Image (cartoon, rainbow, N blue to C red; front, side, top):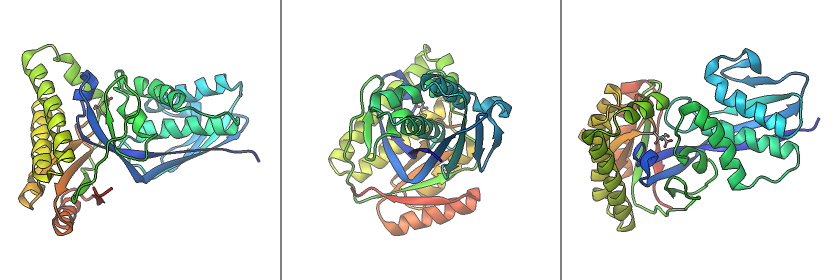
Length: 304
Ligand code: MEV
């Protein structure tokens, strides 16, 4: 039976989340070990099977609306009546690792593959942005664009994919709090007060810290990068988008020798990252975070 195949990976925002919505740059890394694969076949009714949900698409609850609307749009474009979608993912949901954008990206690719139509980056981006806009109203586009990049990027809203080289003798520990992140609420929370001097100042500060992080990476200065990360976390906390368990993980990692640490992604839950200068420190943070949250934590090398 004919099949269409699509896949995409997770992401980690190193620095710049939230400020990126207001035009500041952000740095993101693809998380190639965490992936979603979609297999699409023609069927009598549109049906989704995955580890999380299984059933006719119209029976899925409203949290799946962005995906439902994307599938409806693609069915229309390709003049198809119904498809079955098998979604096989190991990207944790609502963890700030870009699972919704990755699923949309993989579904889009599967439709194009099934119909033997080549898919440009711009078209893929536009479809993912369509469903991301339904998911959280004013997405900057960073989650959509990183699903298409196999290397780190520097992203500015409205601009195309720009690779950004990261080649450091350091390690990033990534740990999930297990508390569901709430990107939409967090983005809306900031939007409500964006015209007040204090919120504006914090967003501006995040913008400056991202520029500091970019210089630190270019200068191979892990200490300066770590400082920028921790200060960015403080600004995100002051903006009201952190969570007590994120704050606890960050404090713990600093006490274990991290050079810096912060939440990553939309926040109000989800994941934290910590920068370590050597494997032993990274291992100690990983073990401690797993104990504290009861969730897996993992280590990424920042060497190219
Ligand atoms: C979410 O991964 C990143 C945010 O900056 C929102 C966005 O850029 O669309 C919080």
